[in-house]
Image (cartoon, rainbow, N blue to C red):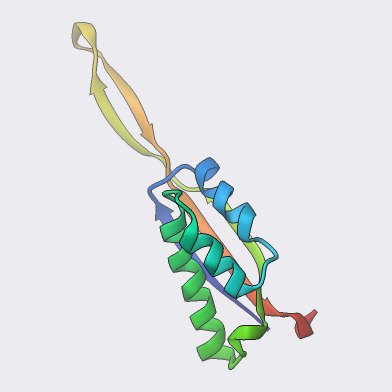
Length: 113
């Protein structure tokens, strides 16, 4: 069985989020949580919350033992960019793009494969 959790519009670049996502993909859930907790990256906090949500979904919805879970799939995709204006010379304006990410984490047990 697989359970998933999605965090949408996380105010962060996908490139920075993928650094942490790549570290936990394919790992045991306990190891992945340890990696995320000890990481000093800004992306670690929303990824930890999403991972804990996926674990809770698996435990509550499918009655899967937490010790048997591992990260089946973890992705960080681009979300819609927030657009802000910055004043420039001669009354002009530049568009500043603030990137967002969609973080998806799927956990499952090894017997389901």
